[in-house]
Image 1 (cartoon, rainbow, N blue to C red):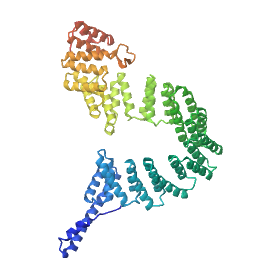
Image 2: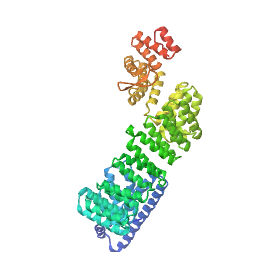
Image 3: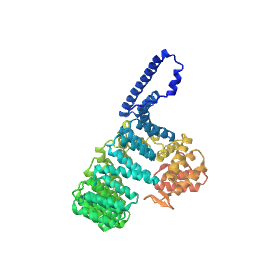
Length: 603
């Protein structure tokens, strides 16, 4: 740990005037002992902070560092470490950043040989675009540790970055001198030589850049990687024909090197040569020299560059076919192909690919969930349920799968089985509040048909974890409205649900029913009319009308419409609504009674 203490001589001299000579030595020893004891205490707290940090107790570590800094404020190492933590706090404002930056820089200069101090200071200077300080940092390290080539290279980069900002040729010359120095050690065929050529290109010194490129190639005429690098520079210098010559030479030397075909394919793609591009991609994908992880980025780039035009889809399918032949048994490949199939709206093809992927790697739960979701999209609910059941066997505590099965059981009227599934989840060990909210919301849905009070309790528990779910807010509001309790609060919850989905007729109907129970019948009628405007008697599927969603009508909305219209004195219209409700729910005794009596009848 580095230490640096600043003593104010003027202050000490002023004290000497008031101390008798005989006492001077004793007072000095006493002050020094006190300072030493405080430093030891600060050091102890610092070590305790480090221990707390290592065990993941970041809050305790931060508090201990603050205490240590208060005891020994001149300890630059403690102040710099505290500054690091201050910078990552969400409350860090501009003043904090400025103060912390200063502390980090001071710590660096106290011990520039410390690599951690250097990296933190340099990264912060880079982030703040303080190139003057960044250059000073790397220049200091370069002078202190001349054998650190990374420091010299970072110094050159910092000088070039400032040159790009200011066009000060002095910076460019200094940077190039550093690169020349490094190249004498690394040799003419090295990343340093490539960095020099890049710098010359940035400086628009094409002549010198070409000369350096020729020198680079001449040093290793049979090295394919050097030839590929030269090709990249020739292309960058606006000489694509020369670039192609070097790509061709590299391939001729090592035709089995897939990485060359990857670079060459990317070159042809940038040159918009689709025929040559396809050929090179095929050669790269077929190359035994490239592993699957190297091929996938090329395939991904190929797909990304072409998928938006449906005329290219056949080409993409062909590439996936080649890849599957060469790299059979890779679940990630089938995953990616499934995403492309989904983009093409070929959902059955996506299901096929996802099924292959699941069979190859049954341990990937996300892939199984994607398969279930896609099966559901093509309405193959039977297969979706089979996959879900097997997934539940393999992953019994997975929340989405368990809730899916519970909802399915509830849909089929098996509320007991559905509730047992939900209650099997280990809620005490789940930290994700969104998942907990979904669990209790599902529980509330299941209980709503048998125990409204218990259902409301479950919904409120869900809201305590996630108060943004409009369906849960709506359901609580509706339960309170039905039971004639907490109607003012029900109105608030219904309004919050509507704010999230203002065109949802179910939410509007709930709001209307709350106002009905509040006996504000005119307001209830306005709302129920709005709910009806977003519904249709086509119960097949959700539609759109004038860009707005339109939902299938429900007997509950029609029944409520009848009740609300009756209370507004439109009796004939009320009966019409009740009759339409009965058509959707034949045998409903309550609605039959209202039609027979031609009058509203409270539940």
